[in-house]
Length: 253
Image 1 (cartoon, rainbow, N blue to C red):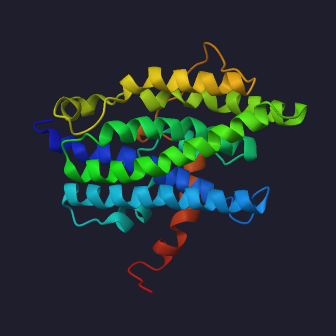
Image 2: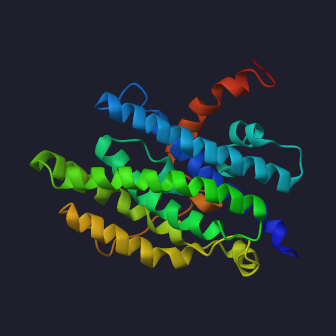
């Protein structure tokens, strides 16, 4: 890239698409939560994530300069154009899967937002400072549930461990630093996510230990989402998420 800003657009998409896709997945719990309070909590977390995505996509559209706003970027891109981590697009699963994913990604988000709050891009820094407060709540909420499920009944422990085993191979991609962001990191525009893995792992291990759960050892780490290579699940999810906007392009109400 001739300029750090030339790579900023895809870098912003990687940040935004994680939240947009995970927010939509979480919204699937609306009306299906295990208890009323948790139904409301998950809906609020989904709104927070989609709100973070909205702000970051708005900034991405401005950086791109092609006339696409946040709605165009959310509803009129194909799956191959999305840059979210594979972890975010997997089916919602049972409550244990949802909670474990929110814990893994929420803790990653806290560390990423902390780093981005020091970005030399003042818009990115402002969005990160606001999102950081929300993400700290998300990870505290999810972490408490991980401990409650893991250290609960035999059934809840089994399901929580199954969720950890299912999701663990998808956590490594969060910390694979995209090669095209090297200049962005050097100029202080974005964070080097590879440096976040050690503090993330230390905090994950602490919570898993308290939950009497364990992380798998030596598993293959899946990757591809950051480069537009996704699972079949994303296409199905986008078909549902984009149907209204694509059926009535330009509609306003």
